[in-house]
Length: 119
Image (cartoon, rainbow, N blue to C red; front, side, top):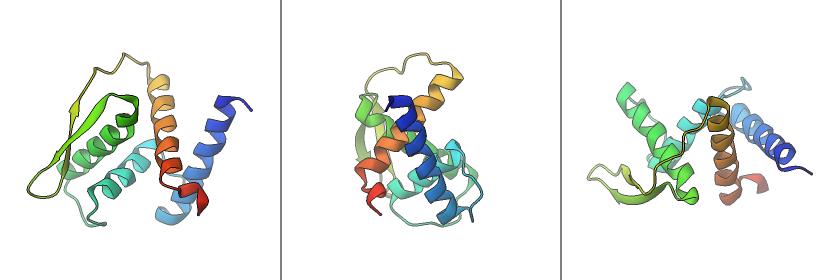
């Protein structure tokens, strides 16, 4: 099976499971799933977040997702328990579609490493 076909199948499985769990079956897009990962990585459970906190959660998720690719490295937790990452190497210029593929691939890897597919 080709990598693209496997990625597509894995992505659709993640999308379905998360959509069923968090969006009453409405299909969640990449941004919504990145947000969910940010909430998970913060580790404080769900609560009402301010707009700037939501952006920070997405930033945390992207750093965490791209960490295995060598772009970011965990640095520290601040006094409020928010994780901070440092940029290790610059991301290459990617077109919109390429960015989406990279994020989907990183999301699939994240959930595979979390035993998501075993549940």
